[in-house]
Amino acid sequence: WQNVYIGLGSNLSNPEEQVLKALESLKTLPESQWVTHSKLYFSRPQGPQDQPDFVNAVALLKTRLSPIALLDKLQALEQSQGKVKKRHWGERLIDLDILLYGNETLNTQRLVIPHPFMTERDFVLLPLAEISPDLTLPNHSKIKDLISELPEGFIMSDQT
Ligand SMILES: CC1(C)Nc2nc(N)[nH]c(=O)c2N=C1O
View 1: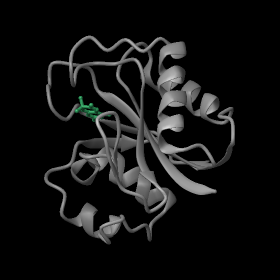
View 2: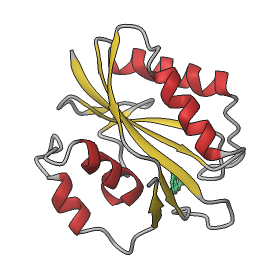
View 3: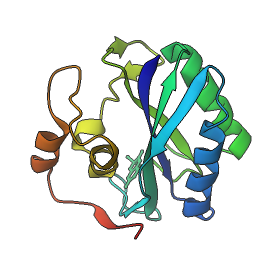
């Protein structure tokens, strides 16, 4: 079994509900075991600012699915939830990203693991640190150190 961390994000159509719904559907993935999920984090958009605030979370599962098989399942979940992605880095109904897959690295057209932008995203690093404070990345960088090196924060609040 491999530990896999999934990043969730939404900023359309009641984002909190979209993230909670996606968390429930992650529990139904085949060949996988649900472990835990972070609180929900509310943040200003990173990148294009002309879009609504985001709700983000991170889930931890154990899976026997290969990275690509998992990606296919996550993309199917996004579609079934009604993923509406108008423009690149624009608003979206739900995003499910593979952040980490065990200690593996992958660089293919469809999938790059660890997620290429995760190290400069507080809305990924903070929920990750909440569920796995001592996590280190395949390149041996520690989540705690990455958090201390972050530029200004986007997080406004997390779910109390
Ligand atoms: C548009 C872009 C880059 N910015 C984001 N900004 C925040 N706060 N949360 C996200 O999930 C997110 N996702 C993105 O893809």
